[in-house]
Length: 264
Ligand SMILES: NC(=O)c1ccc[n+]([C@@H]2O[C@H](COP(=O)([O-])OP(=O)(O)OC[C@H]3O[C@@H](n4cnc5c(N)ncnc54)[C@H](OP(=O)(O)O)[C@@H]3O)[C@@H](O)[C@H]2O)c1
Image 1 (tube, rainbow, N blue to C red):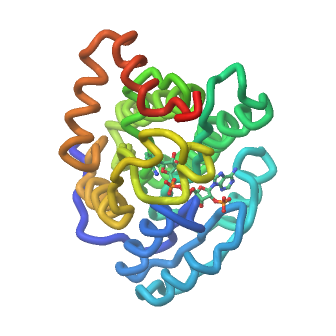
Image 2 (cartoon, rainbow, N blue to C red):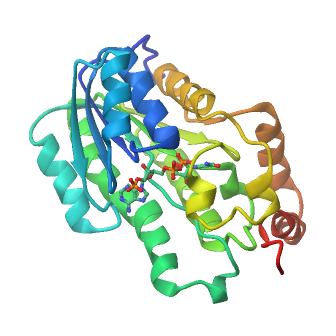
Image 3 (cartoon, helix red, strand yellow):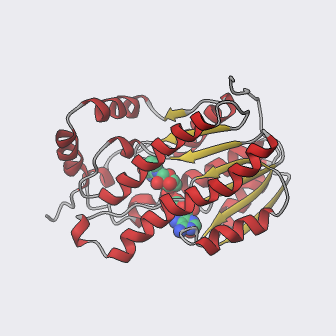
């Protein structure tokens, strides 16, 4: 079944990771359609809430919880209650620089628990209800990092490889339904991500980056169009293709140059 293309969202839209960066811009874009928003993050959401209200959201709820935990996901489901979710933007995620064996295990584990476990758990809950209604859209923020064995950001890249693949497979499983699953794959984007992942002392941390407004709008348009995936930005499309066709050890070496701390 071809996926229904729509011009705008209406109803309840859930955005995870809406306190800053790409998630905040996804919330702002959805607000322009006049939707009701449930914004989720683990920190202050006042900036996202203000942006969404100014952009025209019908109403805005905020929820602080840790999406790396089952309890955090349950809080989101409790906040949704029995309301139909028109769209879920599963965007919350975090990176972590340095060599894997030098990372603190609990920090590395938090990346896996947030990016993979929390994200797929929430999609499992929300996706079941969407399938039962034969309606709804899920936009997952993957990454072009998922096309690259990510020396010196290894756990993060590996989580994004999981998510990129997961989305394409889930879209296939749901192809007989009207439920849309879209994977947004940004390249380096100008958000708090690099600072928080301790990557500022690297080539990628210092490189020119995409505008999160454009990245969010690319993802949003692809989701409305019913597309399975979108790599945002021409050079990122090129990098994603090369990441897939070049030998893996060469890609890992190239990534190493981008992500190894300068002090090493
Ligand atoms: N920036 C890039 O270059 C880039 C490139 C490709 C993909 N991405 C992906 O884009 C997504 C958004 O990142 P961003 O670049 O916009 O960075 P960001 O500004 O750091 O935003 C990350 C968001 O995720 C939330 N988050 C992280 N861990 C969480 C947790 N355990 N529970 C709840 N919320 C959590 C953060 O909220 P709190 O900290 O407030 O909880 C924040 O709202 C991530 O999935 C990231 O992997 C980013």
